[in-house]
Length: 429
Image 1: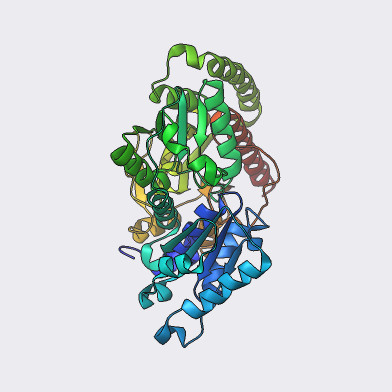
Image 2 (image 1 turned 90 degrees about the vertical axis):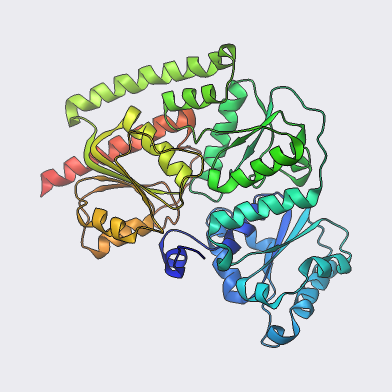
């Protein structure tokens, strides 16, 4: 795992590629997953998925190879699992079998084993595990492998149609954000054909080449799929970040090169919300001062962190200093001038330690892991909002997004509440 330490993946903000591969398949309705590896690898990949879908264990199983498998291979234990499925009459839309790190080193021909089993439904074999990278690398790998195995042809293009690549319900609040993005695209007169790995069925994914172009949402998840579809089917793609904020959402749609008439409905809704937000913010400023923080730290997946940082400072809150800690290097997206420092979390641990050492009376948009790092230093004097996994102090039970028009209002509300709460707490000291 180049430039990453195992501790970064297991204990800080990421999970290994085994979980990312499983997440892509778990995002396909009626798809099953088999983790071909030790039991602890299976549970390690299962846990973050269960936080979003508490029924995923019904279609996600493991083989738990014994010690003999290191010498003789895993064909026997995998065959037993496949035979059990036949006996139970399982017929998923797709069966993905992923090898853990250790099983990948054995070199079993998993695709050959699946073909020989003659299951009667589509299968996909993927080598994954921590040696392949983290969650994003696994998700990207599985999405690309599926497109390659489907062996599609370029269909007749439907006008005003798109695919969304790099969306997942297994990022923080991913389902609510996906629904809002589909909603604003519909308002802009675009039809979404497919969102691989995010609630699209296998049949819908097989229609992916009928869309006019692809929208890459999280670059670290979807860019490789977009490049493959462009190279093999001539499908153009647009990677414009993630639509945070009211004006940010309108700009995101403009970057998709939509016609002005396509933005009429979205603009009208944004204008209405902007007036409400302006009135609300003025009322709050008179009672609770400006929505200002000495420092804002945003830590999370790279596309999310960069996009959120720009919208936050331009539309919602301000700070003397804004720092982004991204889990990956940016691919296509550039850091805006609104960001004072960009830290690549897995490559610059000393920079992270420096920022947290001096962090007080600020706003932290991150995960539970960053809170734990600050707590270890005895730091609690700041406002915090989870925007990334892991998130252990809360449960999401509403349908409120962070992205799009509805998300802009939700973010403003939450951050104002944090500011007011901090003022009240400090007044009691």
